[in-house]
Amino acid sequence: MLSCSFVLPENSLLNQNYYSLFKGYRVDIIFYLVYYWFYSFAYFSSIYFSTPKHRFRRITIGTIILFLLMIPVFFTETIPLSVGYIFYSFLVSLIALGQVFTETTLYEYTSYFHSPKHINAIQIGKDIGGLILLLFFTIFNGTSASPFVHLSVNILITIVVMAVAIIYFLFFMSKKKYWDYYVNVLAVDDQSIISDKDINVTENNENNDENEENKDDLLKSKVDQKPEFSLPELKVQPETAAEIYLGIAKCLYQPIIACFGNYVTTATFFPAFLYKLTSNNPDLNNKQWFAIILMFIFFVFSLFGKILLREKYFLKVKPKLVYILIICRIIFIPLWILCVLPKVFKHDVFPVSFMIFFALSDGYCGTYMMMHGSSTDQIKRERSSLAMAWSKAMGITIGSTLTLVLLAFT
Image: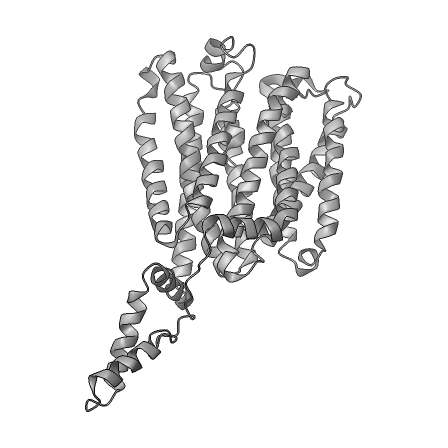
């Protein structure tokens, strides 16, 4: 969602001063890669070190990070570019970490309740945020006073994502099962909470005249019973984190690979490669309006592809058909290249048509895989959803890296 705003105007100060530093590559593309490498690393860390007691801590840390980032942005106008480059890279990295802290928490809760529609809603919200971000990017595209204006837009939209997360939490907190889940995950870490409550209930129901030995035997038999306040029966999970993820990989390796491949194809061309495309209309090439129009088309039709999954008919499609569709998306690689070098598809109708099907298939296939990833058993469901999210983040990261190779050849 945030990726398009890292592609700064070509005449921005940061691009002009550091163009030669990266051997001809636009510096904003480098920031784009920095963002997604940190994004992928943060997802991997969140998956491996994910424990119930850390979930609220993550959202708190993410909120603090994002709001603290707003403070120094107002002072960037007076910072020399040499310092500004390092400062920009640092903030880009923190934005990636903050966004992951938010997303992982949302995926964990929605997956626990086995709510594919909520996962779909998160994906739809990203595209809506992308459209809002594109609006801000269009407004500031003509300004070259400072590249940090675009960073401010990044932070603003990321805070909007945080606001959406808070709304989700308020929604969950209004449900009784949310509090059951909250107490349950705490009790998994500390069995004494539930055990003590069972012991107290048992003591109140026993005859006071029984001897101490019979009472102790009775307490031992009652400790493992289901709590009185209607929580699901608690079982200690003996598996280690490595065993859990190995089990997830065995049962979900196909959707994980499919999700990874889908986003590799998408990130290889969107958004950086769009700035290589030119229009037949010279006015659209001014200030790269043609690339912005293609971005708008992408977000709209990607959003439409995700909305399709709100209908049961499209949700019941067999996974094998979606796998085939993801493989067929590879055809877009030569099609996009032929729009640039050599320019076989010269008319504007070709890149616009390619973008419609490219975005529609990305929104549908990617979100379908994310929703399919939460179909494992309840114990592994939360982490399997995070594993799917990590495969998406890793796919975008690898695709973003391939962008440099693609730009070098074109």
